Length: 79
Image (cartoon, rainbow, N blue to C red; front, side, top):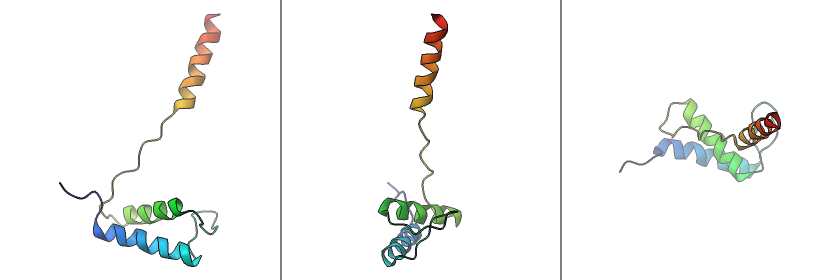
């Protein structure tokens, strides 16, 4: 079975992690310093995607709250 991530993608993530540890990793538009480990990994992966390296697609966002509100609206209309 083939690996999901390429070695070059993992080096990008490693570089982002080192930048975070030093305190020089900045987030997107706001430019704030990144303190979260998960956010540093996400930044490294998104940079690898932008360079065209082998990285899986982002997981689709689930809309549980939208479904719940739609059900409530239907229930109110029936009354």
